[in-house]
Image (tube, rainbow, N blue to C red; front, side):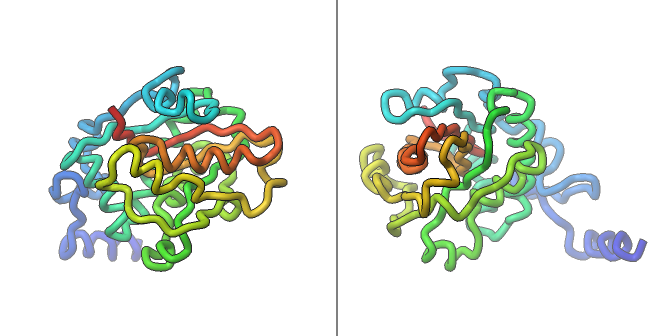
Length: 231
């Protein structure tokens, strides 16, 4: 009762606002208002074979299955969600959106034989600066709805890379090519790994991660992103 009273008073004097539209949230809403949730551009890719996310890896690296929860567009609601998770210390939103992705993965049954979730790692310098890995927050949410363990210390980023945001397709690939490695290979041997990222554009980062994971004997790789910005 006391905690509820404190939260109610906090809501009166410091009302939470929707990360998408800025409107004040109702007490029953979390991070995103109901209208904005209903308006989110869900891809519905998870149950679909040969969907657009999977196609970007064709001829590049062996991927068992791939999906993304939302379609990304500049200045849209998904961009605001990603910005809040990545740059505004909104770890809670990352977990919340991860739960939505986890539900989609579980309901699709295309990812049922995945053994563990592996968030795309940050370089230690960037992790220290940001304080957390946004992809790991998403993975934590996924794990709450899609009951798989998270393994966050085997796939490592070996070189510090600049932001991908304004790079060309080739420059994105060049920027992350061979920048990932396995700290050891035994953990992933014979396992099906689900790589988790915040946004998938050209797939260059995930391609590089997948190549590293596939160094483990008989390993398999699938991919899940919160958003897809490919065309």
